[in-house]
Amino acid sequence: MALLNLTAASRAVGVNRSTIARAVKNGRLSTTTNEQGERCIDTAELMRVFGALKTDAQGDAPADAYPLHRHAIGDAQGDAQGQDALIEVLQEQLRQSNEREREGRERETRLLAMLEVEQATRRDLETKLLPAPVPPLKPAPPSHRRVWLLLILLVAVLAFAGWRWRDAIYATVAALVN
Image 1 (tube, rainbow, N blue to C red):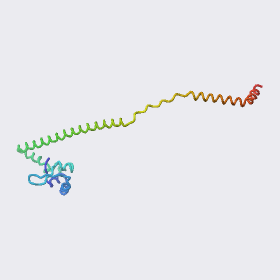
Image 2 (cartoon, rainbow, N blue to C red):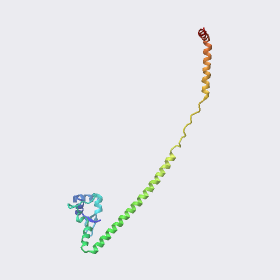
Image 3 (cartoon, helix red, strand yellow):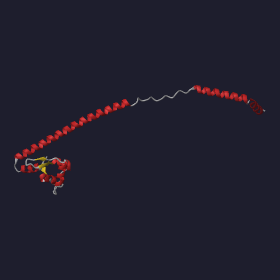
């Protein structure tokens, strides 16, 4: 990307020059020094901190924001060396961009593999830590012992009642028969 001095950088992003200087002082923006010894800011660094570069009233980018673009216009007038230099710079930027993209894809693949391993490990630990499933309890078969006991008790109660109240029962049956 292009290097801009503080004034050109402030115009490119549409903020005051003191805002740029404050961002540099606070460490939010990094600067470099050009051949003339001036502090310059890369347009990529400006976009990182302030977002997209602003445009002028006609909707065009500021002329000093893209010196390579200005240089390319001069190349159209017959400067073949400048055009070759522009092509080389653009090709280098394309190579760097492709390299960053490839590294990003490799990192993404590596992170996905790490995530899959961690998930498999978590599933294994969950399986080891959870108790074994308990089979459902079968209902106990009905106990016939209790039924027989109740039946014997009923017969005993009826026998006792019949023996105890036999005179009343005989009298009732004799009255019904007559």
